[in-house]
Image (cartoon, chains in turn blue, orange):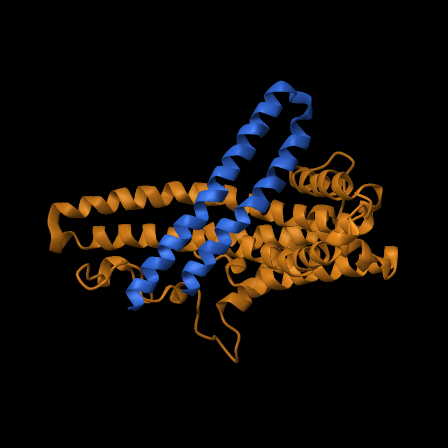
Length: 70
Length: 267
């Protein structure tokens, strides 16, 4: 029973990682594009990119914590 | 080593669906050295001392032409002051630069303990440390908000300008939860979970390598797999350096952004 709960928690973590994975890909991809188009704005773009990544990543990390709690 | 109970040692695929270590907490708990003081507490004070010491020894006798050490610390201090404090918060940011700098130094040293030989334990992987630091940031941005805008701060916080009256209850509820609850929670959990993941991954890979290679007498040539685990562990080691620095930066950056929303309500 406990192993089954753990297995479901593991699947739940996998599901929680899908959205942020796609999101971080979009953020980083667009940031690279922005930096390539306007290299002088690279510093600002990088800061904003990290901010976006940090906010998006939180969802996956909450899933990760829930996996250990389950 | 005997404290680490790993999947390789006690997994029974027939009975267990997931081959997880039976108790991951053992990686993060240490016996008390004396009266409630364990290794983690010692490391917390050590991290604080190192962070203070780095700044102190760099600026004890500041030179016009900086020594190498002073130049290195200078670049960190300048980065936090100019790019994070002033860059995010604006000209008012100079006031918060000392807080952000000490936050960054402490978290950085604490994170880098993860990959320091003989220490190998990130203090930020105990929720108490990032939790308290997030609480500190929370208190600062709420107090700054009340100071700058009076009790109107909560009005701004609940209803950004231009919200239709019909939507006010809904928006107010969402903003209240997201600002006062989710912000500190996600700030703490982000740092905590990254370091926990890194620590578990490192211990699992490196100890798997050692266990497999050590069992060469029992399983013969198959213990070669241990070399692969060990090599992967070393690769993750390098990756964890990046994660440590990046997470310290992100924690500081988000603290600055949260303080900025209190200082300048119109944005």
